[in-house]
Structure formats: C-alpha cells, structure tokens
Amino acid sequence: MQSNRTEFTTPALWIAACIGTSFICTFGFACVTPLAGLAALAGLYLPRREALLTTGATWAANQAVGFLFLHYPLTANCLGWGVALGAAALLATIAAGECNRLQSHAARLVAGLFAAFIVYEGASFAVTPILGGESTFTADIVWGVFAINALTFCILAASRAAFVAFDLRARTVALLPSRP
Image (tube, rainbow, N blue to C red):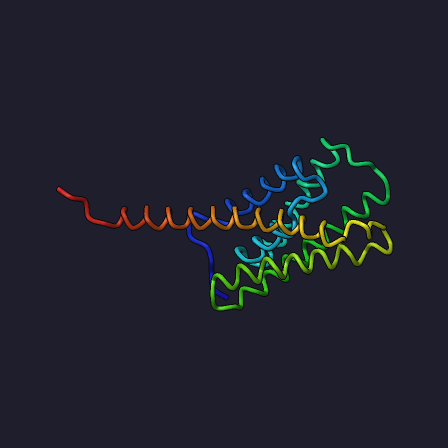
C-alpha cells in the first residue's frame, strides 16, 4: 500500500480535521453527520489502526454533541442507533481502506467514498428491523445523505491536497540555494 502522507499532513493533523469536522457538522446536520465520508477519508489516508481510532473519535464527537447540546433522547432506541452508526462507520473505514490497493489516486478516492457510503448505509439499513427507521431510506433521503457525505469528503480531500502542495512547495523552496 502506498503512503499518502507528507510531514505536514501528519496523522495528528488529519485526525483533528476529521474530529473537528464531525463536531461542526453535527450541529448542522445532527443525525446526518457525514460519518461515511469521514470514515472514507480516515481509511484512505491513515494506517488501519489510526483510521479506526479516528473514525471512533469522529463518531464519539458526533454523539457528544448530540447528547450534550442537541438533547438526543436517552432512550434504548436512540442509544441503539448511536451504537449501530458507530459500528457502520468502522465498517465503512475498513471498506475505504481496501481501496488503497488501487493504483490511481483518483480511483482510490472515488472508490473509497463509494465503498464507505455503500457499506455505511447497508449496515445502517440492516438494523432497521430491530431499531426501526425504514422510512428514512427512501431514494431522496439516501441521495441527500450521499450529497452531504460527498461534499464533506471533497472539501476535506481538496484541503488536504492543497496542504500537501503547499508543504511540498515550502520544502522545495527551503532546499534551494539562497541568492546573493
């Protein structure tokens, strides 16, 4: 597997970006926080252990905001959905990480996003016989959830690419001889 990191985009910076995005997005999207998109990014840009820990932390940030600030109800169903979404996000991280085997960076990004989203939504839908909520899996709703995940994924992936380009440019300039 190829490494997709530079010194500037250290795992700590990437982990903080994912957790911070989850925290902020939860205020705006609540139950539609883009956990699949964030899981895809973690799976694509971090080693598996760090990716799973990052995804767990993004899920924990989402749950903390939900229960502490948005007043999610402390019911068995709500707690069950929280656990189910956390597990779905972890599975999505693994699915995205498997896409790192692809040779093309663009193919890894596209496949990683789709793999993570399909696994996340599939795992979420799989618990509806137990927790309910089948009505939230209409085509329109799933498309809207995908759009939120894809937009978040694209913004963070583009931001990372810009940071990498800036970092490489800064290192190249630092290595050039100074002019008299």
